[in-house]
Length: 303
Image (cartoon, rainbow, N blue to C red):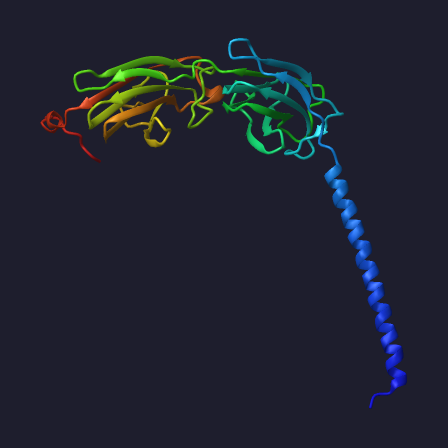
């Protein structure tokens, strides 16, 4: 039988130890709760309200400022200063945000009103300037205007422009038949509406109807651009694309298609500030007579 005189002190010590541990755990819980609540209550840097984006025919929003030593730290680029702005979209549409500077390398972030990041950009504008372009739904959005580099370029000026992009509509070309090929001509420039597939590339979109099933050939040519052609359904489902399937850098897309409506995107491989001042292009669409092609005395040679 165990010695009762030894069991009593042991039990007392065990109870005291349990009480002490419980006290420590409670204290740590309070400390962690305090730290967590403090972190949650830490306010995000205040955003400058730019207001409501005017209707598509009434201009846009502008802001001119400069980065300073008092700027908040970027949420995405530690150690770099940033400024925050908020704007409201009432009318949905294609909107472009530009952050430009003559004395710094701008970097632009776009977020929803709850801070969820939507997009970012470094050099899609002219030279080193930043540009974000996309289809916007009505709502409130925020942008972070910051820079690339190891430190904040104190005193460097910047400008923000937010506006609707013109010329993003899909151009209808009509019905495509063997007797009625379709053509379109245009040009790409830095200010051309961006591609909906690769937004940093300028693009034009076209719609055509194919009344009967057949093999369709699409040629996109340019003397001073690098054409890329894409084909999709009217619902936006990609069917295919081609870069250099034509002569030289020109594009050719050739595929047997069911009857229906289709969208062509005519874009160029050159993007952002690498895009020439203007690049002309020609788009040709035809229904191929497969029997005549099979009789061609100069068949295609595969290497």
